[in-house]
Image (cartoon, rainbow, N blue to C red; front, side, top):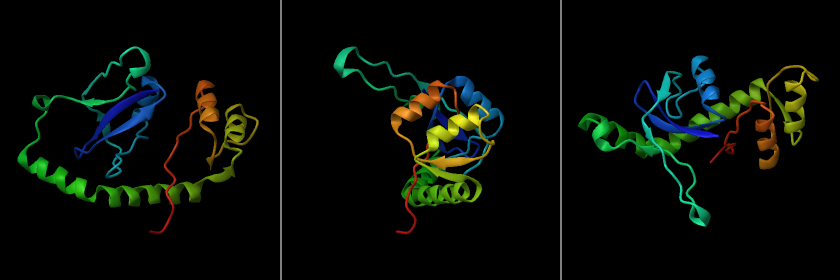
Length: 161
C-alpha cells in the first residue's frame, strides 16, 4: 500500500491510499480519483517527503509529510480560503460522504457479509460483472488485495444527525 498526498485543480489537498503507484496512475488516467472536498476529478500528486521509521517496537507507521513551507508558501488570500474551508470541512465532508453512499446504494447491489466471496466470483468470471457493496474483515480485504482484486473501502456514515 502507498499513501499519496493529492491536490485538486482548486488547491484542496488530501491523502489517499493506493495498492501501488501503478494503481494510482491507472485511476488518475481514467479520472477515477475525485477531490475529497469539492469532488473535481482534476487531481494530481502533491509534493511529499518520505517518513522513515525507526527499527524495533518504536517503528513509525508510513505517513505523508507536507513539503517544507518554503517550497509552496500560500498567499494571504489562499490562507484565508483554507481557514474558511477548515471551519466548514466536517459538514462538507459529511455531505460528500452521504452523496457517495446514496450513489453506491442506487447503482450497486448490497451483498452484505458475502462481499469478499462475491468480489472473487466477479473477478474470476464466475458471476456477472456488476457493482457490489457490503462488509468484510480486514483480513479478507487484505487477501482480496493480494489476489489483485480491485475494491475500495469507504467510511459508511449513518444518515440523519
